[in-house]
Amino acid sequence: MQVIQKFWLNFGYCSHYRMLFKSLVVLAAFIACAGAMPMAQEEIDAASIIGGHPSVIAGSLADDGETVLWKKCLNMSKLGEACVELFAVPQNLTVGFGIEIHNQTFLFPVVHGNETCLDDATLLKAVELIPQLAPFKKVIDGIIKVKGFIPGEVLSICLDLTNFDYDKSTQIVSGCADLDSNILCWKGKCVYKGDDDLGCFKKHI
Image (cartoon, rainbow, N blue to C red; front, side, top):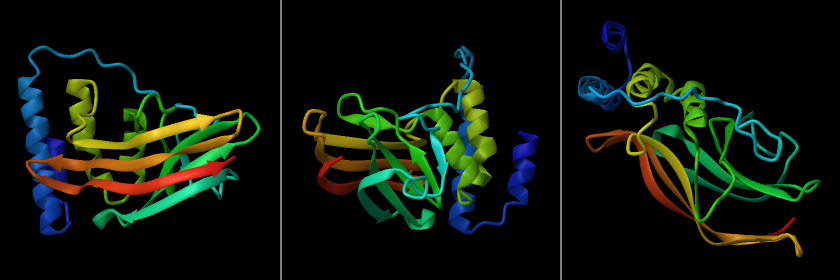
């Protein structure tokens, strides 16, 4: 906690960020005090693979040589522009989704049902790699140390899909998407929070 307090004293962001950071420190302290029954902590593995790719790619999917079938961008306030992309690997008829923020692309796990969320390992990489989130890394690490996971109400990025269908016989993928995001939220304050309608797609691989 002394390290976090020292970090806080040297933290030079605007008042909104300072208030949010202080709230998250309080959250970490609360969780630590309430953790009388520690939860088992599994080792976080950053090697999530989709279509043969690591879960984080520098730059865009197009820069990485992937076939981007559909792309929708939105303004995530202090994080700037974010773009959700549907991509395909034609060699093995694999499709997947990624979100590009600050020139880093984070891949969603394989879709099961109607929702897919960035896993904790990928969220941690996002906190490390996105400059606006990096100052909160120690707080998130402290929460994980006690809880064993990142609470979704504090940090989560999920893609909600409706009428999602991928027909390998016709090689057509279709559906509609919403991006549901809680980016460092506590007591009503967030770096970003939104349920953004991304529209629909129907694409041939």
